[in-house]
Amino acid sequence: MQALDLQAKDAGLHGNYSQLVLELSPVDDYAFLRGKLAGFLESYPLLSGLPARSLNLCPYWALKKNKPVLHFNVDTAADILQARELVKAYLNVPLPAQTYLVFYLINSEARSFLAMKFDHRLFDARGAELFLAAFNRYYVEGVLAPAELTAEAGLSRWGEKFAAGKTVNRFFLALRRNLGLLNLNKRPVRARVKFVTCHFSAFEFKSIEGKSEEIAGHMMLMPYLLAVSTQALYNQFFAGREGSLIVPVNLDMRKKGSEEIFFNHVSFLFFQLLSREIEDIKTLASVISRKWFDQTKNGIPKALQDASMLLRIMPLSLSAQLLRRFLGGDMAVFSFSCLAESGYAADDFAGSKVYNLFHLPVVPPAPGVGIFFTSYKGGLNLTISYLDGKMTGDEASRLAAYIKDSLF
Image (tube, rainbow, N blue to C red; front, side):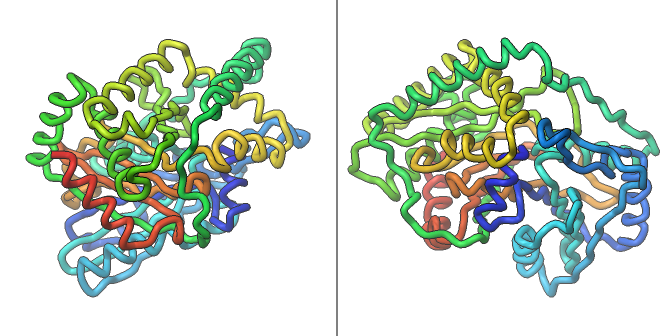
């Protein structure tokens, strides 16, 4: 995460962070909400911490003696459309120095939007949802969730780490060999992230799940969504060209039943998809499912997680260079994530009805385009995140429309 943060900052972005947004019925007493949030944050000393390095080696989360400080900003929009645009604009506002969590409340007459911007070293996407769920329970019942920390520091069993590093190196060498990679990396970009979002109702999501069962098989929603997204992007930007696309896919590594809130628990799957496989959606979904099974069986996500520990003991600039070697350059065409089960299950938040919960992640500078699916209360959300210039606004809107039309 430290290396990804440096990579993003080197590209002119403000770091490796994201934003979770709750669409709410109007919040009348935001001062009361602010007070409850401040009290909740003070119960978790972790939130006063910051990244540090020991003798310029291993990064760790250093706790400070002072209490966590709440950063809570309020704005008013003329209508719901302006409120939505403010939510997107706020993501390009930098986090204050040594601040890793900020809240924005945007009020309009019809809706309120609470945006939680967070550094990925503090939360991953699921952790952010679990954090808001913990706050809502505190707000309603006065009960604090424990700050469960079960993951080991990872600073032992170095033989296993180096073996994992060899496995990962062989895996990436195989990915890069004779591929004729297709990508969008020749386009000049600006250090600003933009978004296109699309919501599918519970009824529409049921229809999508039915199509997924038909095309990809039972419980194969992720391969189906990835197949549709890949085919849509290929047909829009590379139609008729031979070669392959490489897509890194986020994978939650929490143990089953774990609800750990803090820090990052994400590893990756990598899919090399040939142009001839992309032509037929059923073939493509089958290829993705097989590669998913093979990589999981061969322990690639765990090896990536273990090998990342080797990066921690390197100087940060060197670990960022190695990360660029694997994830940057001409390798990936877009990143993908599917959070099919939300960590936030309540119908309300701090006394306001929740209409939707969606994510606006900052896509890493390499590849510079991300397609993300999340769910809430039976509905499905699609977010396309892209660096300004990697694609135009019209292209991103057409891509979202293409994906939407192809899902049913």
